[in-house]
Image 1 (cartoon, helix red, strand yellow):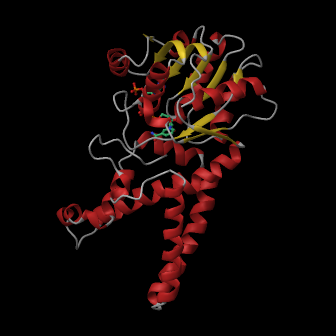
Image 2: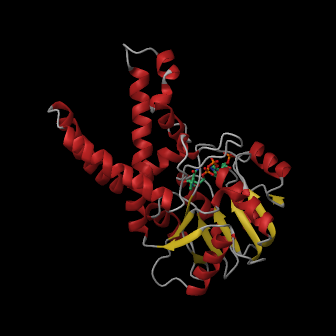
Length: 315
Ligand code: NAP
């Protein structure tokens, strides 16, 4: 964390699930704004958010929550972002920064930007932090600490506004990287989207096996399967939207992955131990690099903290 103190008078969060609640809690913990307003689709979530207290005021509509805010962050599923942008656009205060946390950037920009007038600074963002958990009670202020947040401002975006948003994420404990939306979508396709697709697919394959029973799959899951099931427990709405909106980059990475998988298949069939050994050795080095970069721990169980059950997996 940086010791920034207050950065905004009023921040508005639209979508109060894992990411929205963590941002709200972080703003309060580090005193980054005087007031946090919020809106979520259901009454139930709005009530839970008010009860937990990670926002200061809960509103009956996204537009009502956004009035007078200096920073508005859309923390809803990607598929809902266009309608939200359309609704809040007329009430946004001139000079306000509008951002989002969507896991895909090109499609989100295409959905939001056309509705936003020139006197608003639209700066798309994506915190690379999260978990398979969702909802307003799954967040916590340290979610973004020692994680990356990627900002993808379109060309010509006001530098002062970008710097202000960068400081906000630094104050939440993240490191910030700026890149183009298209590069973001390629990087995330291989580091996050494809691994989720593989996890969903392997869990589905195991469930459909006929000669291995479901109870055996569960009983012997520590053999590797268990860690896929955690990723495959991620929110279906969020991940449906990711694959629908980052189609191009995911299909490109999937093509490469399929070719590499076929090569592995061949090595196994031909008993090519050297090829297998070389590939597994290189993979171990990648894992070591992630640990050295502070993005996971070397402990068994993928560094999972069972005491608090706080996840370490990034999305
Ligand atoms: P979540 O826990 O499921 O929360 C989503 C929130 O959005 C809920 O409060 C939901 O309200 C609200 N919402 C849904 N439709 C809405 C609408 N039309 N208008 C206003 N609010 C609406 O999801 P999340 O994990 O926080 O993900 C939110 C965003 O963060 C997604 O765009 C995702 O791509 C991105 N992201 C997620 C992760 C992750 O690991 N989870 C990481 C980085 C970025 P109800 O509860 O009332 O339905």
